[in-house]
Image 1 (spheres, helix red, strand yellow):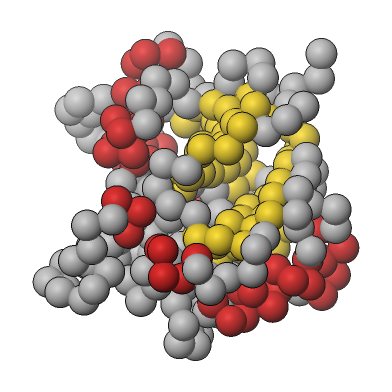
Image 2 (image 1 turned 180 degrees about the vertical axis):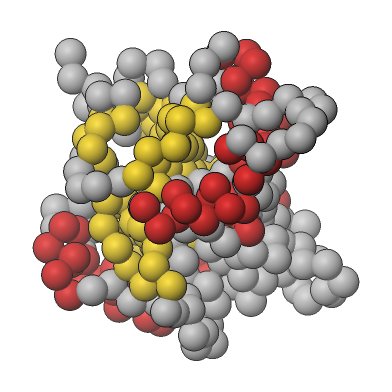
Length: 261
C-alpha cells in the first residue's frame, strides 16, 4: 500500500510575534475567540503508515505538542531558519528519548548550514550535554525526495530577499513566509486540493503577502480550498473569514483536516 497523507493539523498559524502580542490591547489581541489565539506557524502531517512529519520546529513547539497530544515525530521539514520557525528544535530531545532514534530533518543546503550554526551545540559543539542533545539526521534537499514513503516536491519562494522552501505533497501545498512566487513554480501548483498560503495582514509588507495579494495568488493557483496562515493581529478570525471568497479562509491553531485517500 502506498504511503498517503491521512491528516494535517495546523499547530500554529501566527506570525513571529504570536497572538496575543506582548503589551498589545487591540481588538484581536483582547479577543475571547480561541481562533484569534495564534502560536507561531507550524504544521503536522500524519501518514497512513503511522509516521508524523513536522513542518518547522516553531518556537512554540512544546506547547503545540502538549495541546495537540503529539506523542511522536519522525521527521521535520524546514522552510527557513528564522527564529519563529526553528527555535523549538531543542524539544526534539524528548522525541529522541521516546523513540530511541535520530529524527530525520530536511532543509535546503543553505538552511542546513544555518541550522548547524544556530544549533552548534547539537552538531558536535557542546562542551557539556546537560539534559541531553537533540539527535538529528540533517539531510540537504536536492530535488524531489521521499519522507517515510511520502513523495515531497520542494520549490523555492522569496521572503523579501531571503529564500524559503515551500513543499507540495500529493495535492497539498504549503507556502509560508512568502512575498513572491517565481513564475516557473506556478506550474508545480496546478491541480491542488488544498493550498496553505502566507497572508499576514491588510497593509502591504516587504516580506509577506498581505491579504489582498494572497487572495490574488490563491485565485491564480486555483486550489479547491485555500487556508491562509502566518497571520498577524490585524486580522480577526470571524470578521476576516466573513469577507473572504467561499473557498478561502483563515486557518486557526488546532484546525485538523482529514485527507481522503
